[in-house]
Length: 207
Image 1 (cartoon, helix red, strand yellow):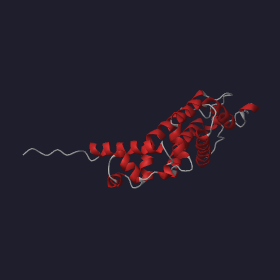
Image 2 (spheres, rainbow, N blue to C red; image 1 turned 90 degrees about the vertical axis):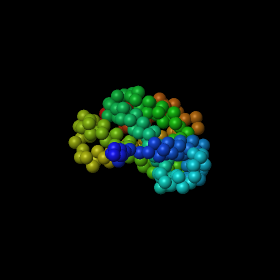
Image 3 (cartoon, one colour; image 1 turned 180 degrees about the vertical axis):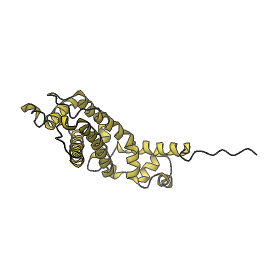
Image 4 (tube, rainbow, N blue to C red; image 1 turned 45 degrees about the vertical axis):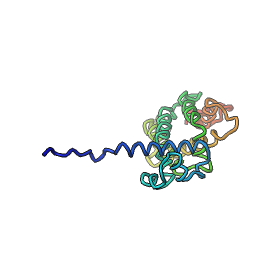
């Protein structure tokens, strides 16, 4: 009798993957239409054409589903941040910083919903953590040349979270501003603040 083949333990049933993809798409579509706080599991289930019980088979609650749905986007944003040389002692903002703002702008409505008062705290925390990781990697790689002054790992971690929190705060306000500055204008302003001076006063000497 031929031996029965079994799937590897880490293989996921394609039907499960399809269902999760439907749920993520439904959650993001609703999030782009209205405040996340008003979204319910029933809303997501209806949009995905499944029943509520199916949603709970895959996610424990709405925020867990939203976090999973936004994970890919958060990853893209973190990678864009990693390409931005925050330790670069340039007078003008590096082009990568403007690219970071443009990346957020391409999904401005979604970020406005997710970061706004009716958004998801778990999403905000996840975004801040990933940005802090990328910033910490840059500061650690720069060492003393980046102005770290031989800072210990805990101090570098504080600096990374300070910068990550600043970026999250700026993004939150920027996408909600009527007639908001362009990505290039926002990048120049933020770069001036990072370098210790507002752009209209001229950049300070590198720290």
